[in-house]
Length: 433
Image (cartoon, rainbow, N blue to C red; front, side, top):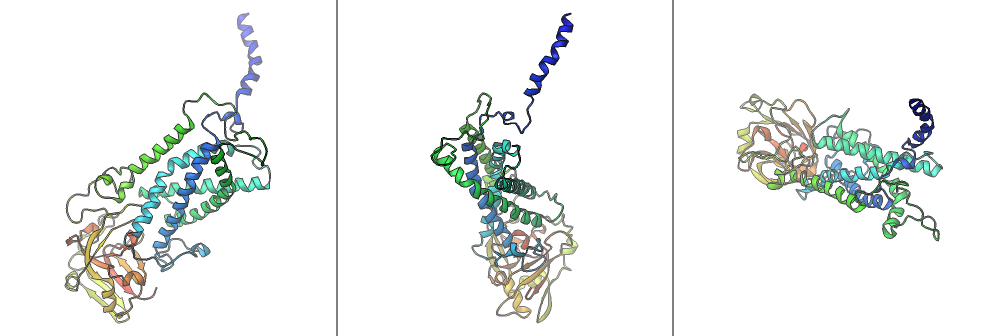
């Protein structure tokens, strides 16, 4: 009989169990006491500043490749009006790309905890039903989809690129470029809709409806919160600490000395490069692109073409020409850079003069011994060729180039992305591109 009574009582308890089961669409499903409009507004304003900086420096990075100069530089075909802002990338200051791309990558890494915290803070709203209460609300949800999807896509592809994990179904440049514009569409719409409310919340601490109406309930606060184990200030402090940790373990890839040694989360930080004049970072080694001593030995010749014809030079003949020096860094799209290295070689403008351009050097098309991979060919603008610091470098820091740094000759141009400083140069073709 006791057993029979226990079985009989189960149906009586089932309705209570079923009512306790909640879905994400039920506000009671979300019970964290940390969520609230003020918490979200603080994160949102941090992202407003940070993401704006990311977008601007990203566009500058794209412009630095001079993508409308020649098809080999352009990884985003059919960009149309999206390329209207492009301009001839300058050569000064010589650390310009080191600054803009260093900021782009560093800010992107540091914002990861902020972005994740912001998404966590508003996730109950993503499941709210009905999905669209009006046309305006539907447009807001669409902008949110573009914003969240675009942001996650940009951060994911950017972080993979920083780590040199090219796991993309196409060109990183194409994907990242178009993804940035999709993200911007959602970002601008979201800011227009939410910025006034965020500012109002931060000023008063109270979400309000129409003027002269009572304070509305906090729409992000849990209706049935669990006991608090962490204050909202504490949660913001944790997000800030996470960003600070990422800053400390990544930003040093752009500096020499102790900071680089603690940049453990980036491929060009955390390791010593060894002694010697050539002991600074590279992306691609000679072995990785199958450059052999036979390719760069006595048989190597530099071919220079222009309207006056075609000339061929051995390394010894290039060394016999007037040599010039320039102190320039190497800065790459992954955000890492070196300090200024002292390069020495022949000016590109002097080589242009030998093949028919004595007064006004034009663009130049550069080809490498490297037979495969991106940017084995690249184009430089006429303003880059004219700059007296733009060299066909033969030496660095008083020693011949090492194989990994481009022996027997490489391009070095002030303020240019690292991939345009072509290594293992084989051919220079001067002319309008």
